[in-house]
Length: 90
Image 1 (cartoon, rainbow, N blue to C red):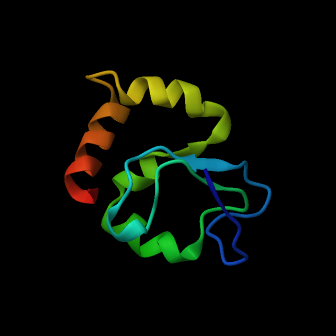
Image 2: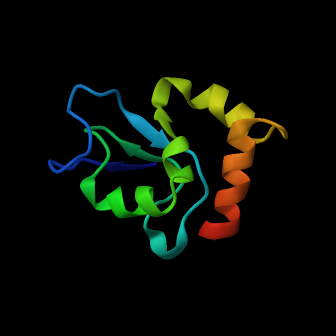
């Protein structure tokens, strides 16, 4: 897992740690299982605006197991988002 701490983040420091559960994105901009401990870094703002699906798979760490199960279950919202990102990100 990668850990990123950044003073220029999109959330305040009291936010829970979050993890990105989507596929690796082109150019290494965002890798699967990246953990954000102090909010989402501001440098990701353009990506989140361009591909809003990415934000759907940046979730609190404590929800990781449940979301991972839904990502592989056809018919769930998480599955659909992951599949869309596969088409754009890899």
